[in-house]
Image (cartoon, rainbow, N blue to C red):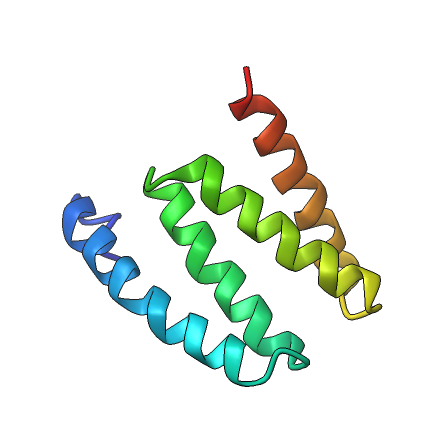
Length: 93
């Protein structure tokens, strides 16, 4: 909402505040796919805000790849993983 109100700096600050919370939740129960996906969402918000996008995309891809290897991704999430791979490839150029 803040980004649509042209308050991207405020949005970025809030996304950065949310990240450690998502990291703690995901770390508390690494087997919980929902917690891992919550972390992915938090990281992608930072990517979209332009906050260290390449490093965050690498991290997102690792999380999604691990979940995929465990058979925990939905079909939509697998598509999202392909999107992240494409974004990473484009950022390398």
